Image (tube, rainbow, N blue to C red; front, top):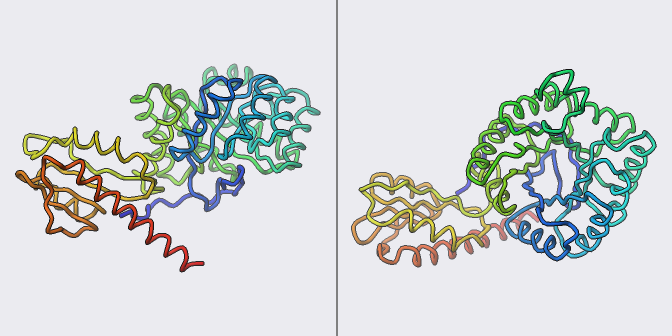
Length: 372
């Protein structure tokens, strides 16, 4: 049971990254970035496919050299998810990956040199319908802005972003999105607020260099959650010192918690206490591992006792309320005659959850056909 979010998103300009819409009324897309050597084509393709399988809508690939650009050609041929090339300073790399079919360029126009080089990249992007992401980072602000502000501030990030925006405006290019990332949550949030008030192009959200899997997930959830709750943001990346697949999972978890977008199972589980009639933590670990392949939006409650179990089960697609030896079982908010043996909870729940997912998929298919 997925209820619509009360959040009202700012309506931004819609652009297309490959076949994925970003901005406007498009769903907020979730992306990650490869951490393999781009010149290792096999490893990079494998990681991109894992990211896509986890639900990643877009994948960014660092292209620091011409050798990497040549490798990008073969990477692009072997994947289906849209690819964003991350490029700094060398405009020739941007032109080369554009030739090889890149779906978006992450490049700051002001950092690639003379006016003729900037114009060459922008003209190429326009000719091939390739959007650009302006990516400002608190750790790499222009030297004069560092001197002007003394340290990274929201105003400094905003001013840097607007410099690059002004270049694209001057060249009459409007197919771009912007990010103003910082590792400090408040700094990033304030910078995005300033930018959102100033431009209508889509915004790419992120708390950069957020940290390891646990701390980084927390920082990202807080920072992105604040912005998303204010209707700011059209695509996001959770930046972790961890497997890129985890970034996708956490990104969807953030959107899911705000009822913005749902993919897979939304588990509602108690932290467990001495009232529990079965091992809730062990059960949840097993279910999450077994059911990672389910992408159907659905909710499952696993509560270890009868205090909160029935109430939570009434609001979920599949629910379990712990009881002595055999626990109460609910489908679609209705209690079933069947009770689940506490010694066989994982196997039985998995069977019912998969069956419910199939039923929901069929219902959605019929709705789509009726709309058509």
